[in-house]
Image (cartoon, rainbow, N blue to C red; front, side):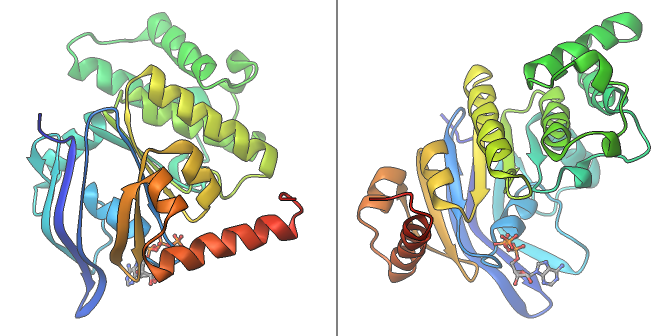
Length: 269
Ligand SMILES: Nc1ncnc2c1ncn2[C@@H]1O[C@H](COP(=O)(O)OP(=O)(O)OP(=O)(O)O)[C@@H](O)[C@H]1O
């Protein structure tokens, strides 16, 4: 069976400067892959290139097949179709995804209605409202009927991230890309959001591309990892093997740094 996301020889440049070099990996339906590496290693750019969202001034080459469509060089309407259906992204900072001037419920209603139209079963009025509340319940937002009427600034960071996740789910994507989805949150909320993403991906059989510099988080969330360093994949494999027996010095140093942080925090004997 063909992969849901199949990246071959992806390179990203800013002018002459290489930012991602010859990256290749693939992800099947329902699979979970972690992209790890320190800040600036090219994780976000790889995800943006995979969805055709690179900023102006950046260019991508190679091949990115997403749900059987070539992303690189694809016209905007093809990319919009893919983004509304095959893939959705949750970013580190939920305010990136949310409109500050729109109530949460309406922000979720828009992608829900769009997806329903595409599926030939349009939703509106009370039925759309019920679907919004059901989705907000699904992301475990407390008191969804009240928060549906709230503006982003009236919610906590964790609540905003739940709304952003609900918006992503509204498209019913085959692939969810989570780009450091918990980095901006406090530790307790981080754990809740991780469990939420984990549960939703399983329940909906979504593939997950999970981007993080936090190795313990990745270890608990995905099956395979790709380790990026300065835009180059230096190591890849099942998470248990890569973490237990890292082959590359860079992976070893990332793991050592995570362990010494744990030690400093008293998390280990
Ligand atoms: N629009 C841009 N123009 C030029 N360089 C860029 C642009 N966007 C990102 N970069 C550079 O590309 C490199 C990779 O950035 P990227 O955001 O992918 O890193 P990352 O691994 O996701 O890091 P972080 O965890 O900090 O988000 C960085 O050196 C960054 O400065």
